[in-house]
Amino acid sequence: MAKFSCSLRKPVSQSNQRALLTFYYHKVEKGLALPSPRKEFGALWITGNFLPLLGSYVKDFKIDEVVASSCRALQAYIDIHSRDFEGESVVLDAIEHALQRVNYSEVEAEGGTRAILASSIASASQIDFEAFALARHSIRNFAQRDVERQVVERAVSIARTAPSVCNRQPWRVYGLTDKTKIRSALKFQNGNKGFGEDIRCLLLVTGDLSAMISQHERNEIYIDGGLFSMNLIYALQALGLGTCCLNLCLPYTQEKRLARFYNCPPQLRVIMMIAVGHLPDSLVVACSHKRAVSDLFDWCD
Image (cartoon, rainbow, N blue to C red; front, side, top):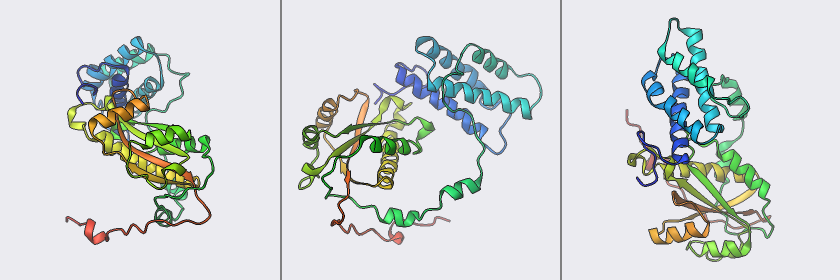
């Protein structure tokens, strides 16, 4: 993992630096989202780490979304200090100087905080999620209809809302709709016998090690990738498609062959495949009995 992960001291590649910028600007956002933000919170790492990295990134690469999000988070930092605190500030002067050197206004990307109402969350949540979740099944009998790519892309867009460590979003999805390529990809997976030939769309979810900061986060791509995958599965269901998760617990050499088949960059690790398809009017699914809550949950106080 150390070969690809970024370091708090020496990020190497552009993807490493993007991840670290995201780490820092999201720290600013989290501090601003507290009930009572502290005056000059994070001053040491903002001036000592965040601003120098932002400057070098803009110099070496371009003003992109991560730069715009960083700058808007820093501007929000200035705004809240102007509103709630008095007195001169070295960190605010440093931020203002850095922002004056970056023209990010034309790049669309959010940064900082936004106010929302509990009622708006409640209004958007007025669905029977229990019924929706109970209606999800692993589908192994797809209708013989092509899956529209734009529907899958919409589901991926919805799935982006999954939480991830410091908002680093280490996932990347690869899709196939060509039958021949799907059959070739499925040779790496042993759980599709009897229905693999009917799969019209196959997704591969991967995790990016370059988004991780240290070896302590070695499992984070699988945690974040799993959260994203579940979001994606529910999004596909909400858009009228069925799915079947296909595990990829592969030996390292076989995983590398699969990655080469998909032409994945070397810093990516495979997480799972997802078979996607339209539902026939009626079908049979496995009962898949679930354990009782008492078997998997305990109060600890």
